Image 1: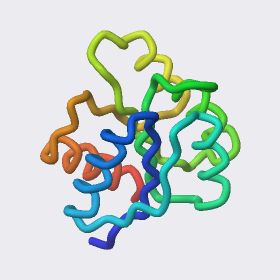
Image 2: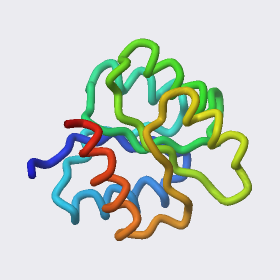
Image 3: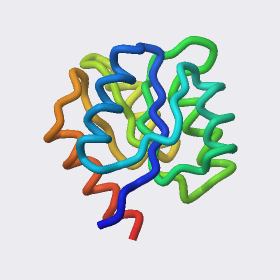
Image 4: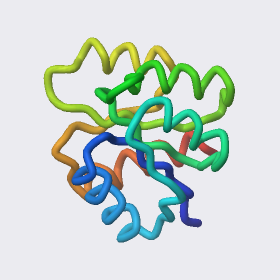
Length: 124
């Protein structure tokens, strides 16, 4: 299978680094990163990645709203939410907004690989 072009969105540099390392290890290309919801929307417009990992809680605009905006503009976007335990309501809202799945923190390589494979089947 070919490598996916991925946009990593999280306001934590540690999380961005961890996800980027795992994705690269899995053979995917991280084409951009963003630390805010607004940055995610702008980056998506410029990069049109195959996949987005989207944090839910961020400054200026949360991941739910950023997901909603991206999906409204790019209905075929594939977004996976990254969340901490205890954010079930926000997670549900994200899925309603169009996210294709979710991953709980702390990020584990095997779980990220599985959710990407699920997203790939939806990509066709």
